[in-house]
Image (cartoon, rainbow, N blue to C red; front, top):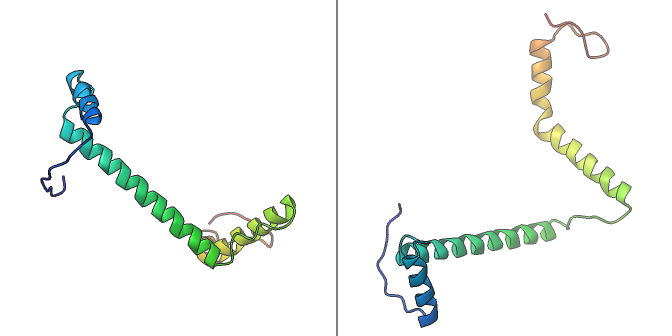
Length: 114
């Protein structure tokens, strides 16, 4: 558990009464634990929203998603982008494996493994 700081918190009476009733019904372990979890969930949600906003800004800054055109044109551009990413990031791994593990390939690119 991370470091803690003790604070005094003022809650509306109806909110505190509802939390206390939940504790009495054993729906929660403690009032402090319930409030801690609620705050942690809210902070995580705010962090997610901030990250989403940053991603949207990054996409917008890079020219957007460029989804103009017909469905088929969009799909074709996505396939081309995927191919380019593969060629840039991963293709060398597969070329290396094919040279190391299947050096006796025929002209079709296939053949018997050694």
